[in-house]
Image 1 (cartoon, helix red, strand yellow):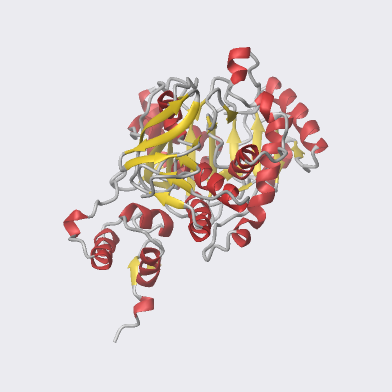
Image 2: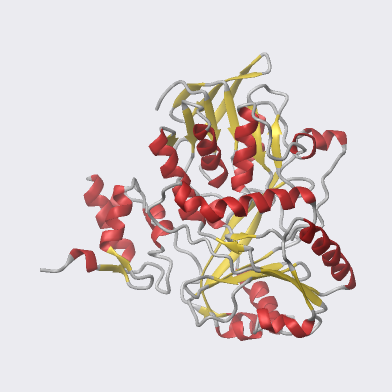
Amino acid sequence: MKNKASVVIVGGGITGVAIAYELIKRGVKDIIVLEKNTLSSGATGRCGAGVRQQWGTEMNLKLSIGSVKRFETLQEELEYPHDIEFSQTGYFMPAYTEKQVEQFKKNITLQRKFGLHVEWLEPSDCRKVVPIIDLKGLMAATYYDKDGHLNPFHTTQAYAMACRRKGVDIELFTELIGIKTEHDSIKAAITSKGVIECDSIVNAAGGWSQIVGNMAGVSIPTYSERHQILITEPIEPLFRPMVMSFYHNFYTQQEPNGAIIMGIGDPNEPKEINVDSTYLFLQKMASVVTTVLPPLKHARVVRQWAGMYNMSPDKTPIIGKTQIKGFYLACGFSGHGFMISPMTSTLIAQMMTNEPLAIPEIETKLDLGRFERGELFVEPSVV
Amino acid sequence: MTNKDEVIVCRCADVKLSEIQELIKDGCTTLDEIKRLSRACMGQCQGKTCRNLIMQELSKAHSIPIEAIKPSRFRPPVVTISLGSLAEEDNHEK
């Protein structure tokens, strides 16, 4: 391992490798990515793999629309020899309360202003999009056919291979154990395999972002929260879009190979680093999903696992600089890091190379300082 | 002689030996990486056959003893179970 670098990126998930790619594309040299395990072994490789653009705020619309645009051509851009499996099969978002109906109406007005042709579905239209949905209690739904999903392992690998070809060092099984600062500037990254002198460190450590922050003396109000997920064996095609219900707090989608992936939030989940699986999750998930999509009762669960959301106090990412010169944050994605990684990485790279930002308002809206200023970012459409 | 390109290592996800060897060539040194990129070990049988075969390939390619290769995690449930049965049990408990 080299003992000098210009930039050290902490975390070999999608965000970390995408930032490395955007930096080297802009001519930054001597970049090292540190990953304590294997690529996409954290949240990236454990996520539900969906990418949606149906958001309720201008900021999230800009982040997601820009990211989907990049995903559409990413495989060619990265010259990846395999398939990143990007497909736009849509997101279907049902509403079950008056309040949700009102919110979705507001969202769709904003989404259409941004050029997204999101459809408003009355209950009688819903089965045209999701033939197996039970209509009980369903009041309306929104559907956008350009939302979709892609393979997190291959997308990360695609960025990583492009990075390595261009000269980025990706150090696997190498853990960051400390950060050296001097006069409020980054001086070195201390790793399990030696010290790397550097000018900048990017915290893209996902579930461990708060620990990496502390190493630099920067207190980040993020915490980790386990989210469990399961997959069934492949069965005949039953529905195409991601079905995401804020009311039931679950999402599910049938993958291209026929397997059905699904996850459900647990409001009592403690704030801790934990990726264990529980039987209780299987029961709760099965009970809810077979009520909303009854034919799924025949699907057989093959495996279950868990990953960590890195939550921020307002469930919105922290992207930006800190009081330590050279210490940048790309964390607190609250369950949406994978889907906006192309824009996150572009913004961080623009910030580090003093280019104009694609979304200039992130400097005052997504920065760490917003929590101290009491300017929380409110997104109405999060699970 | 067998055509090596056609040898299937994982019968659940139809993963060929040649695909495993290509991933090793691309830099994979662990079973976890190969599992996640190829979907081997993630099908109905959960790697009962392919896990050992892939570990053998890793052992050969990197000249390390097979016992030094970390197996991937065994995930629950051990055998498949229908969502219907799980839901029934949940309703019963309520």
